[in-house]
Length: 85
Image (cartoon, rainbow, N blue to C red; front, top):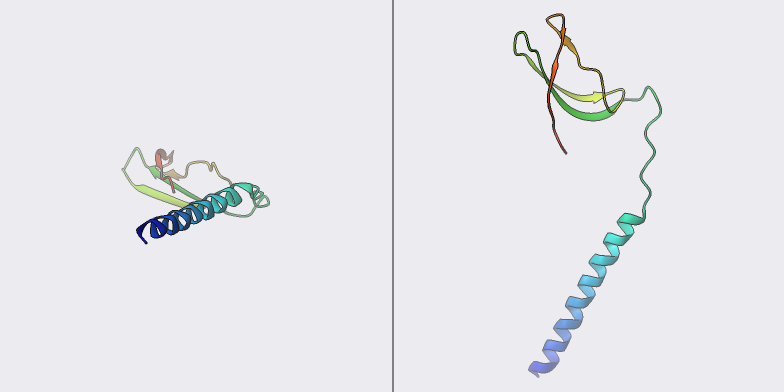
């Protein structure tokens, strides 16, 4: 009886591993979506800091993936660090 249970358990675990593997391979098979058309806003997460007064700004959407830094105190703000998703 114990031997049959071990075989059943091995088959179930094998099927679960196979299912997970196939799901991962299907996820890799989808092509990367095309970028949105020009002029449409894109999601970004970038932090900027004013070198004069210390004001910080977090940019969440921009017209392109690498936007120009905003201006504050008549100076371009410094990039603090991009926030990874």
